[in-house]
Image (cartoon, rainbow, N blue to C red; front, side, top):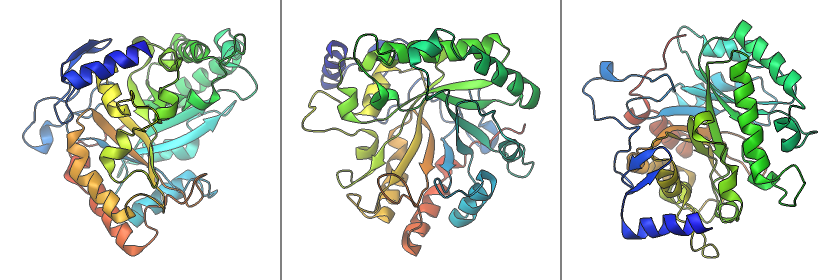
Length: 351
């Protein structure tokens, strides 16, 4: 909490902060180091080796989750429903599964519409983070590395055991403390690299909820700049969230020292791109879905460090329906958002 209080003090004072990744102006709407000077013409927009678009942000989708529809059918259905394409497809894998699958590879290599993969992997449900960090699953990591080297040389996003906050067991010796998570993440990334996986762009994905961010161990989750390329959050709009600003900077009266996730990321990781790796609007959100999508379109440019926005489209999400087109008016509003030039300025590089 000492670091958190210091960060809030910086915000209140309106000063810049030198952090682990460089220096940034902490005001929302001010360009960050990952946001280059405006360029003229679409031809000038480029993509870095860490998959950072030089103009605007990637538009992505986790399509028709919990429906059982295969990912290639689901993303094409979602693209048809929103009348435009997705730059990023968010897929989920666990334990000993090998990835990307044949379906996912075909999506990435579609010559008419190439897509970036965001692969979300939980290495185990049976081993603690401490055990994984100690090498218990090295055989699994090595097998995966060999498969990736053999089948998929293209760059892709990789997040490891996303949203770890609610899996932390703070007791000494649990093997699931926050520091154990950081050690596990580091071990997996370094082992993959050692075994030849050089094309994974790594993402550290937080839940984006104030109650977890206020925990004394929260800062200990971070694995380190050398193994994290992007930082991400997974916020959802419920009855307490009325617009995009409230989504990415959620605060709560019972946690008055928490400044909001985007503000915290600006201060803590000023040189890293931010991904909204999952976001969704529930039916009981603080404003109608259509109005909420309009707020995203009008406010997204106030958050220049956000370089990817990936919607979680599911009629059966654990807390409600996040389908983006539950009625015609909301579907049209979502299409308008998805087609906004901010998300159409940089092309996905061809494989």
